[in-house]
Length: 357
Length: 96
Image (cartoon, rainbow over the protein chains, first blue to last red):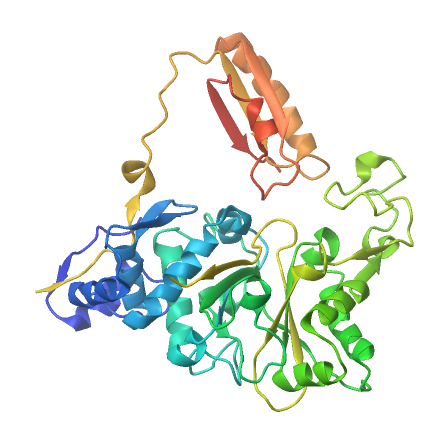
């Protein structure tokens, strides 16, 4: 049971120990949510402090703009970061994201925040080396941590009860990345998802940690190279491989340029990956107690009707369709590389994009 | 003194939603099982059979409604939830 809230302290150095006693941090150190700093952040947002962002599941405590700002101050965010934090949280409260499930599931999907548009450069969001982790970007870490602390403090996302995540990954501590629009040959993710070019937007997607795709031994042919990405997309242990859903694929700028030079648009890459990232039904669901015969009672009801579940050789795609493969160009602009972030499958955590107000 | 802002927000029920009215008696009780099938279904089904009998014999319940969500991590669809509209109370859970 957390201690009763303490509304004043005599000195700032009381905060670190107090924050752990109050259980308002998930384990990492925080800054104190000092009233003056929180008020400055709220004022800069142009929103009223009691504007309700939403009830954050599973604890369903209400995040107002002031409460979100308090968590953002704790995360070390600057006032200009708050609109991204608010947009990310509002996106996560979309029913398709299934935040209650993302918070509590046994699966290791964590909310990934992708920032697009001029805000990436303006705020200094991570886009280069170590983009998914220790990027040294204050904005990326502060925005990711601010969202995480809201999920912790308002959502009550405590490991064990109610969070059942078996392993998890470091991205659960908060992660925000940016798209390298200046070096990408393709329109940004947010633009592909309907946001006008040149506008700031945030996309949230619940996914596993990035799984590296190196191009050892690969020739220049795009299909050969994308085949390696597809192979990771449809790994036998992925939720996607069995339930479809969505997946995020990051390309380093040099690999994206290589594919573009071969004439591939963003849509072409999505089409090819959708075609290649498939597994035989016989591999996915070998005959046995879980599929003893061709009785439809043993079919996966979440697969579309065109998949003949009596045919061991039918190829089952790892995602719902080409548009379910979210391409992002980011990371160090040195050598060709890719990373696959499998989603939660058909259960939720689906990509939601919000334009920043 | 340095004033701090509570980052935890207020409980939703106090701010947005009051508790649902308490029923005078349990005329019809619903059980919504989080997942059917081989993992959870059989054990919950056995438990539910006992609950059904107990509720009717000892708690004066007229009717018990059982249903299964297709997928445990997603909300039940409106058609399934509609089956519980007349229930005095609904228990949602998973037995393993």
